[in-house]
Length: 189
Image (cartoon, rainbow, N blue to C red; front, side):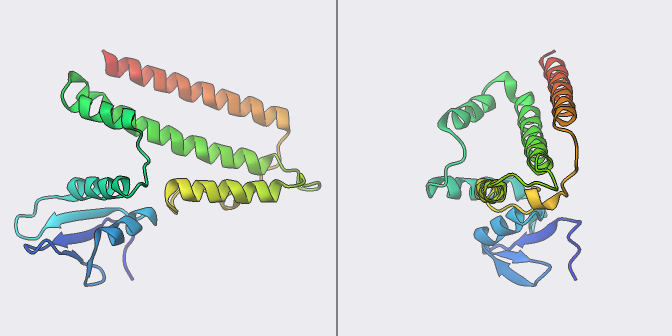
């Protein structure tokens, strides 16, 4: 049984073929993309030199998806990324992107929690099941089926009063925004 807590080691041979060390077979970029969407971390190393090639291959996977019309990154974002390589902002961009994706994951998780907690146990809202199914389909399509992101069914409904829940959520959002502002201020110094 493979240990999924550590990264899946992929070795690149001199022929540029990629070898999965867990299953002892060759893999493609699409296979690696599937591993990542399924929540698995990967590490790609050159067999001869031992160099870590993970970043290079992840960028290649993104480029292939973008070139096939599966556009996730708007032109303005791509332009800003290119620009960040040629300016002094390079130290701020990686942290900003990481914080943005962390906030996106947290926000999506809270949204799912709120959707499930809004439905009273004794009297379900008409059409809520269909709305949750549509939300899950949207999230699955948006994340490429990434299994690591929670869905409405992954968290049990927690009964709470609507006012207390929304006050708590508002306070959580205010706290997160304050933390983000503080981090951005620190990065700008």
